[in-house]
Amino acid sequence: MTALVGAKVPPRVKFFFWLALHGRLWTAERRMRHGLQQDTTCIICDQQDETTDHLLASCVFTHEVWHRLLSREGFMHLVPSDDSRLADWWQNTRSSIPKHFRRSFDSLVLLVSWMVWKERNRRTFDKITKTPSQLVALILEEADAWIAACFRCLASRTALAV
Ligand SMILES: [Zn+2]
Image (tube, rainbow, N blue to C red):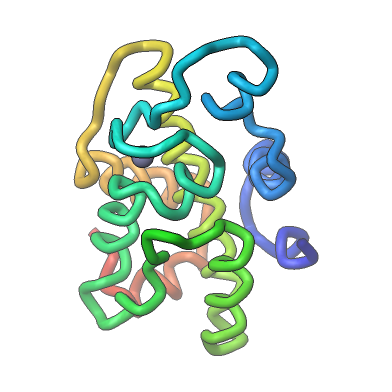
């Protein structure tokens, strides 16, 4: 959690990620536990229960987004696996990369998680669907909008710059 302090992201995104790490997002699974809905199926992949860990770490859609972001320059090993838990994957991965990339990586994790959550909300409430490549384009736009030098440092290393 201390990494969140250093991540260069807006406070509302840090708060969102804090909620995610503490199981406080109103996912379909949590809504069912509170009697608010019956169906817990992930709105994005239609394959598994929509939990926070599924949505932000192990959903096939989220994988595809991470894969597109990280694979080009050999960072594919950082992509979460299909049974990853968000907190474990984030902590294990950040401790496996050089220290000077960690803050950029934290920002990227928060940004991608935020954008996947927004995609989930678009599909749930607005019935609007974006493809993984469309979401990657939005992520890169957002990165430009709210992460300056730190993210560009990582982006240039992973050839994300557009
Ligand atoms: Zn899914």
